[in-house]
Image (cartoon, rainbow, N blue to C red; front, side, top):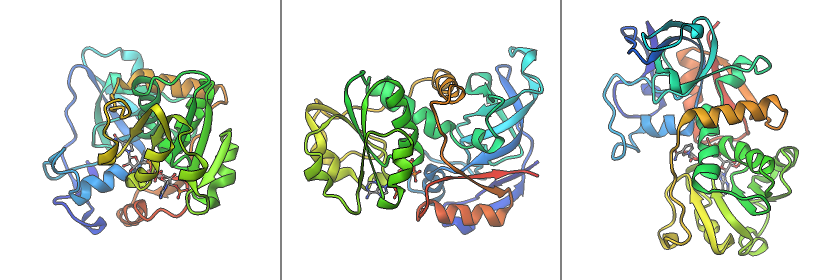
Length: 307
Ligand SMILES: NC(=O)c1ccc[n+]([C@@H]2O[C@H](COP(=O)([O-])OP(=O)(O)OC[C@H]3O[C@@H](n4cnc5c(N)ncnc54)[C@H](OP(=O)(O)O)[C@@H]3O)[C@@H](O)[C@H]2O)c1
């Protein structure tokens, strides 16, 4: 089968299209014909080699942890009713391939009203947002949550989960995304490029979620969490904020409760997914997509669909 991936660490131009054997499925897995996949900043981090200490890759490596596809084969332990269903998938890797073998515990039926592009866009960021707030942060109704990077993929979903849970949400993003953050139902919106965030939000957050790209906002996070509050970073937390009282470690819970909650919110009209930027799945578009990942100018999620 065809797959996009790389044979060594390096810049976006090392991405290539190659032929690999179709993945065999285990008894608890299904085989998907992938119809589309999304890009995450993590894909770029893996490709560049920045995550070698935490996750050493074997080559050729096929990235991709957001995918949508049709079930074309089921393992012995998997219910036959999955056959032919359109599903949202959250693979550990392999989403950039034409076929994907994945545990039946890492897929969920695509809601009818959700487009293919949307379905390919949010599993990683949505699951992260859910487990950051619900499983790890244990957010409570009435609390004030500050989200750094509220205009991003994880942050925008986190903001809507928090609103659905009855929190007061303050979101921080670029000034050009103020309206977009307001439209998500965020109560107060600030711009990291215009507002004096540490001063305006000093010690306001019962919890602060740093969902900024590569933790660019990490120094500000320290100033805006309440004494006794919680601080959770999706990237590396600042050294001087490593007080065990404040720093909340990320607990990576199971995929299905998160996916199921997110699909329910979506169907109920309480979750707007980030705008999708759709490209055909070609190697040229993929290289350009990886180049855009870390220099992102506009909000939105890059999604690649097959014809
Ligand atoms: N630990 C994990 O398992 C895990 C999982 C998912 C994501 N992550 C990490 O979490 C981060 C966010 O991921 P994502 O997919 O949501 O990325 P994204 O869609 O690119 O969003 C990045 C966000 O960061 C904001 N930002 C950029 N510079 C900032 C600054 N100086 N101050 C405050 N905010 C700033 C952006 O705002 P504007 O767009 O308005 O400029 C945007 O809201 C990434 O670094 C990613 O690697 C980690």
